[in-house]
Length: 126
Image (cartoon, rainbow, N blue to C red; front, side, top):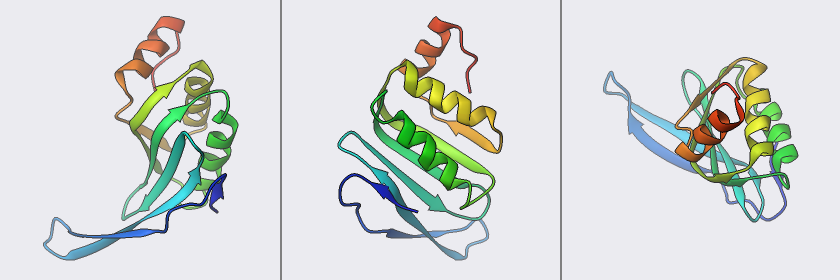
């Protein structure tokens, strides 16, 4: 399931406390890495969280879409966290928009720059 252009970091495990006071663990698995972008997944009760960190552009948007499509095998409901995205061009925005349109995905923390770009070109926000 891991798509990499360079060596991926190993899975990390986190321990937390659920609302009912029980210990929980989650693991963050690297799904994709290139020199500019890292995509990870945290599988948890409820929708799994896909986190993007870095830059999305014409050079990697096809790999982003492939990785997101494969992530649907992890969980049919996904939260895509874009808080770590530092740059995106129009091809990256379109890739994310098209993936969101396929359903079963919620986007959170889209950067201001990405929302502004969508407004400027007349694309509906996620």
